[in-house]
Each structure stands twice: as structure tokens, then as C-alpha cells.
Image (cartoon, rainbow, N blue to C red; front, side):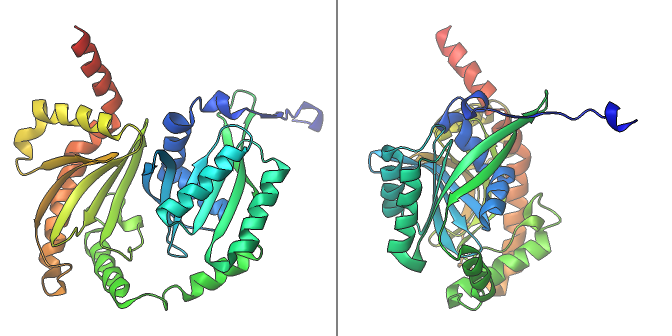
Length: 330
């Protein structure tokens, strides 16, 4: 093929609303997936992992609550499919205050100059303990190709790259005794059971009383398979968050009643606030290294049951919910 015969496509910009019609039900679940949080993490130099979506803050809802594993700081993410405005600027500050976040990420279609300056001012005024970002989300397409997202940083803290490098080197030394205990416990769990549970071997050991094994997002609901120690017990759970968490819970619960309840007789479930969960629970010390092997066996066996029985239902929950609505109409 000669140079004159070579065909080169034209890069075309796509409006965000053409890809995601709604912030809460379309864009937030898309961004909250592990794959796309990795894309955002790469743009910012962070290691973000979602804790919950549509989190209640007074009379409002924060789009995404996350944790940065690199700096060990809580993160709040506010999404906007339109250019920046004063309302969303105020919401980001409200959510950060209400949730105790130290990193704030504001994603929008376009960044107005006055709002970029406001973020710069916040970074200067709050010092090293806080970090504010505003990003423009771009989408491009070549011909009939799938739309490709790109994040462009419009404002961030001064010297951010140096800070991340410094924190990543010192974060291990800054662990508290309790955090060191949890890191050691989950590291051994990952090493001994990583080959048996899909997704676990790819995780880093957490510094708290839970370890996420696998995360998926479908529609307006996010699903996390976790091993956790709430209060004085030990739990293997499917945690459901997001705007449609209760709808997803109801849809899955209906299918369990019909098809799978006999297979998981000890399975418990509950709704709380804007989230819900299915779980196995038992009494246990938190954690007991003298009996860690038995605990790892219990957690891995029950997480395997949850993934096998509930993951297919989580993936298809929207169709189940639609069937329930149609049944109620009849």
C-alpha cells in the first residue's frame, strides 16, 4: 500500500450526554467499575477503590465515595455531565466536609475559568492535608468505533507528583499497629486463597477490617464481594450500593426465594440506609492469627458460594426487576 492509499480516520469529539444520558444512573455506575476507576487513577496518580455510590450527606447524595490506597485517604467524587457551575462547586465542598474526605475529585464536561481558579484557591488555602481536582471528561470516536474516554486535569495541587512519590515511599512506615495487623492478616489471606477466589490475587491487602475480593457494576447498583470483621464477628458478604441498591436487592432476593434458597440455607440478608447486603456470619475474634488458617477456610468457602450463586443474579438483576414490575401490573 502506498502512502497515498493509506486511510487515516478523523478523531471526532462526542458530547457526554450522547454516551451517558444520566449522571446518577449511567455515568456514576460506569465510572465506579474497577476498569474505569483504574483509568481515573492513572490520570491522577492515585490508586482508587470504590467504597460506595450515591452516599447520603444530609439531604443530598455524593456520587462516589472511594479510598486511595496509595495515600490512605478518603476520596469523594462528584460527577457532572455539563460544564462546571456554582451549585456543583458547593456540593463538592459539602460532601467533603460531611464525609470527612481529604481528596475531592470534580469531573465535568468543561471547566469554567472561575471554577478552575476556585479549585486552585482551595488547594492553596487548605495545605497538604487536602487535595482538590477538577477534570474535564472527554469522549472521542474514530468513524464507527466505540467511544473512548479521556480525563484532562484542569486543576490540581501544586507539586502533586512529588507528593504522591513521597507518600508512596513512606506509607508503609506510617501504618499504625492496628493497620499493620490487618495488612498482615489480609496478605496471608490473599497468598493462601488467591488462587481459589477470582479477583482476590489481584488485590493489595487492606489496612482495615475488610478485604474486597471482587467488584462489579450493573446499572445503578455496585456489588462488592467482601471478607470483613464487623464488631465481634466474621462475615463473608455481597455488599450492594448505588442509587438502585434496594431495587437490585429485591430482584436478587426474589430469585433466591424461587431457585437458590435451599442451596444456601444459612444465608442472611438486610437493607440499611441506601445499601443492602447478603451475608454469612459467625462469631470470631478480629482477627485471630492463632486460628487464621481455619478463618481463611471459612471465609473463602462462603465467598465462593456467594460468587457462584449471587454473581449471575447480580449481573442480570435489571431483567429480574423488570419482570417483577410486569408481574405487579398483571
